[in-house]
Image 1 (cartoon, each protein chain N blue to C red):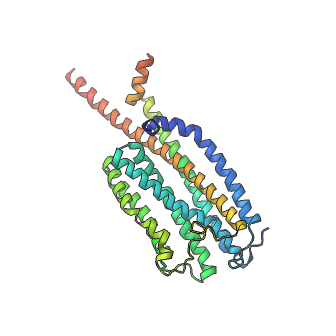
Image 2: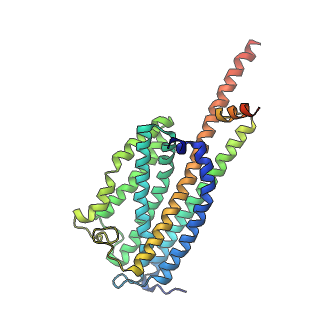
Image 3: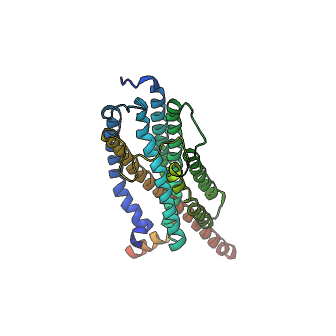
Length: 61
Length: 250
């Protein structure tokens, strides 16, 4: 175990706060990305398409 | 240049680049943390507390760099009216707020053992606190206006006006008598920190920078998806309304 002296608590709390915040941001971004993708998939499954997607389909067909 | 600012191109590009950025972040963070705790010696004045600097300084730098990204994106929106610039500005604000808060908290936790106080109304600390409020203001203004285009433009104007805080933060330690020490890394005459501590600090700063680009890229991808969802919902309503009169006529 590292001996960080009498101010060890300040050091550990600093690292804890920073990494907890950053991990929180990462979790939020992953959750938000999955949510948006699922909403988009649901709308597309209902047959609603973006103009650009539609024109691509027309070209393929 | 505009080809690179195309949302579809960006989604394809970021899908390929993001895993590499995440990998590079993890490697740099691993190396940086090892150097911060096992390579860098205790400072002759601060003792072990200097280890807080390895996360405090990168957080503060990133908080300011993120604001620079928002300001540049805001100029991109107001001058070229490119939607991807607005996506970039909107995505960066919460990330910048987190880095600013991290800088404030770690600075405060360093200040107590070194200065004997968690907080002093010193020019550097106060101007940095204003940056945090500015971030909150940008997020609040954006969320307060329903019209996405208007919200983007007004937020961009506020962001550009707010850039005045960046030089104030940077030069506050030179312009006023502050408890906060003057610049010790980015200054004329070179860094005044011993290389044994400086290299660990620079590796952590690089790790935080790559992390920021990864988070920003992911947040931009989410925002593009959100706008596609909103656009499809409008299209769905339009199509429903277009079908109803035909059915009524029949």
